[in-house]
Amino acid sequence: MEAKQRNKARVILHIDMNSFYASVEVAHNPTLKGKPVAIAGNAKERRGVIVTCSYEARAYGVHATMPVWEALKKCPNLILMEPNFDLYREASMNMFEILRQYSDLVEPVSIDEGYLDITDHYGEIGAVEYAKSIQKDILNRLHLPSSIGIAPNKFLAKTASDMKKPMGIFILRKRDVPEVLWHLPASKMHGIGDKTAEKLSSVGVYTIGDLANFDVKILTQLLGVNGTRLKDHANGIDHRVVDPESIYDFKSIGNSTTLPRDITNQQELYTILDRLSEKVASRLEYKELMATKLHITIRYKDRKTYNRGCTLENPLDKSKDISEVARVLFQKNWDGSAVRLLGVTAGEVIERSSASKQLDLFTFSNDEKTVHLEEAISSLKEKYGEGILQKGIKKEANLTENSFSKDFLRQKKE
DNA sequence: TCTGGGGTCCTAGGACCC
DNA sequence: TCTGGGGTCCTAGGACCC
View (cartoon, rainbow, N blue to C red):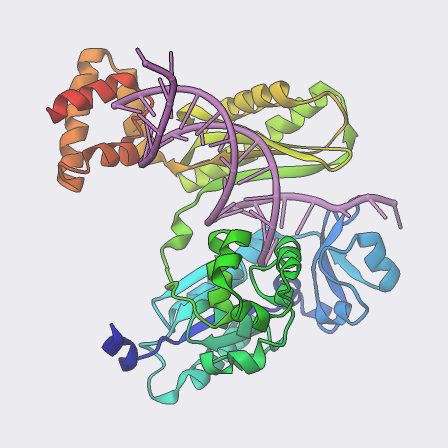
């Protein structure tokens, strides 16, 4: 272990696209270049907020999450655009395609940022030159600016990419952490939001340096497992690997919308739930997934927000089925007052191929079920071995709810 | 003018089983 | 006899990020 670490320290890059949506719009329409551009959801409606904006707009004091009316007050000649996600997704795919030419270990984090492990790739020219050529390549081929952080781990790389924007490259070594990070307020650290910063200041931790040197027991009492993690990060320690597969494990798919006005009419609300369910269903369909849980979100006029959900008997992906469950959940939980936002989320999604296996088991008669179960079980045994059978079954065919299958398994075990 | 929409991870408490 | 402890699943909700 020790020898291995001495051999070669990891070199991780974090690539962060600068004001991505706005930059893509400018790349797509060069006449926008040099102008204050902002992307706003519901740009024309009363609750529109700025999603992102160009650096020219930022110069006027416009920033993300600012209400549109306020942005227009600060910058009357602001060019407002509705988001064009198809365009952004395409640019994102092209960007990650370029990254993959520089390393096979690419982990997309969101539409506009990702990690690269270049340990085995930068070779003779060195990590910095390697990063520079990536940055140039993206700019030349896609006309999109980016910032890159270079570090021995993900946390430091992410922190570094934030240090120089736009078109920056910043190296953050572990040994630089005390000098570069420790004087900063703890709230500047990735992973520390308002609530955590408040908790930390209640025990006298104000800077990243305070955190780095604070008693880990007290931190754990205060923040749970996150306490150790944050303290490690403050000391420049982070062992997470760059995982190219992580984008494939989807956990949930949801759709929500703030209503153009507060609505109390049940029929209208149902119509909106149906529309949201349709969108969720079509995204499930596209990704060949099915939901095993369903949640709805209700936000009232006073902004109080409730999530209510249930575990589904059988996985669902059809719009009609989803909206049926959504309506039931809504009816069970709505207090009858004016609603500001509605959401529908498919949770614990599984691949359709494994879901159909499961459905098959339940649609046959009992005799046939036995045969199918036996088939399923023998293939699972092959895959997982005898000892892990029960777990394997759960994971693969999700049979836990069915007492018949439990009894069956018990018999099988004897 | 009043504050979007898409996610992930963690925790806590109750139900249930052995 | 009058009460333990461990484990898992489920739901709700908080915190955080982009």
